[in-house]
Amino acid sequence: MKKMIYLDNAATTRTAPEVVEAMLPYFAENYGNPSSVYELAGASKEAVAKARETIAEILGAKSNEIYFTGSGTEADNWALVAAFEAYQGKGNHIITTKIEHHAILHTCEYLEKVRGAKITYLDVDENGIVKLEDLEKAITPETILISVMYANNEIGTIQPIREIGLIAKEHGILFHTDAVQAFGQLPIQMDADNIDMLSSSAHKINGPKGIGFLYIRKGVKIRSFLHGGAQERKRRAGTENVAGIVGYGCAAKRAADSMQERTAKERELRNHLIRRIMKEIPYARLNGDPVKRLPNNVNVSLQFIEGESLLIMMDMEGICASSGSACTSGSLDPSHVLLAIGLPHEIAHGSLRFTLGDETTKEDLDYVVDKLKGIVEHLRSMSPLYEDFVKNGKKA
Amino acid sequence: MYSDKVMDHFQNPRNVGEIEDASGVGTVGNAKCGDIMRIYLDIDENQVIQDCKFKTFGCGAAVATSSMATELVKGKTVQEALEVTNKAVMEALDGLPPVKVHCSLLAEEAIHAALWDYAEKNHIKIEGLQKPKSDIHEGEEEEEEEY
Image (cartoon, rainbow over all chains, first blue to last red):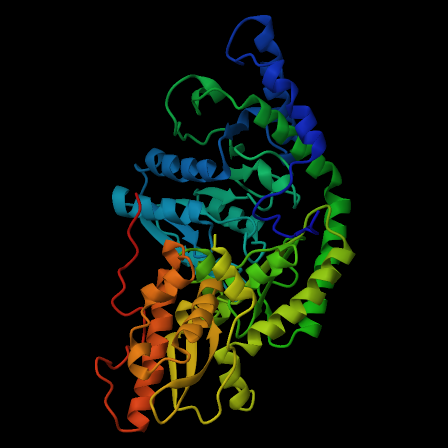
């Protein structure tokens, strides 16, 4: 088989074999609908309850605060739209950031354009961190919700969630966080972090695709987003994805149990990759905060070259990575996150993201850097931007 | 995503480089949109393109269309080169994904810009050649809204 090094774990992860194993009985054997009364259904019902409990325990939450959804995107949509509806009596203002995932940003645009919400999109600093004084200043008596992601999917920057949660609490404003990249990677505690709602997704932590959850703090009065049956305490209709939920429970436990050891190893490997790239490839720039950073995220801009070309050439060497270039998004603009941290367009187009997983080795990363050096050299040799740069005596 | 021909021209681009004292040089596109193409032409006294080189900053499709465009204009007269349209480049590459069609426009524009430069340098007029647009994305439609 062709060599493959998978470094796109922020896109999705390999479902862990023990997760698949845990899920299998809930297809052909224990296939009962958890809502049914007969014995067959009991196993499904129990399995769902157990997964819910596992996840709640990891977060320091109560199990009746965990609501399973079809994805992290659904959880984000639900949190924002339902909070807007529930608290309209108080106001119509929502504060979020310019670096959120599209599941948040496009939902905010929808609320703005169709539902008459007022949205403040906070700037971030050059490392991608929200400024707390900006947040304080943006709060008005009409503010009903603050939604700030726990950690960014592109540049890996971790936000001061606890402080943001405290500000929200002091002002009596709901606080939601999109923790799709953070759950299972960082120790999250709902009470200490002052979080009212939290979105997550299983497939980012070696769980299956198509299952996520929204944590809703007891007392937060948001209604259901999908209408129908009485599942999920009447808040999320639709027959439970039993196997998916079981898989999520298993993946969450696995991630929580291994967190300390795994993230320590990933951090070390991450720093090794960053060090080698910065040392051995000229005109490279690390995007995101060097310290307040997801343990598995590396994001660099390689000047004078374009991201999609890089990705195709890396793919030819068996390396899976991603880029914030326009060409990978189907639009003409590069990643909104890279623009928000102040990168010029042409540098944002040349960005490259590697996200490590629990199977990544140092040898993998050394192979990647060795290949990357040649690829960058090749692409620069055919870049008119590099040609101009050289002709100008290597002055930008 | 890409045809075998596109991948071939991306992996083994033909005519990459510069021509010193070129008869005409054209650069189009902009870094903001993520693609810049520069084409060098060496044109003899009979107005035949003897050599053609390119440098491109852009995606796989941009590199492949540059490579194919240089292949198509080599050996052609200036007039014939004008007929190398983006459609011809795309067909020669066995097609491009819809989102990449603008890359083939870039190749056509780059050839036109290089020919324009040649015409200006030599104070001649090439029939049917219009002054190239400075930005190939000019007039492109805004993205459609969702919902």
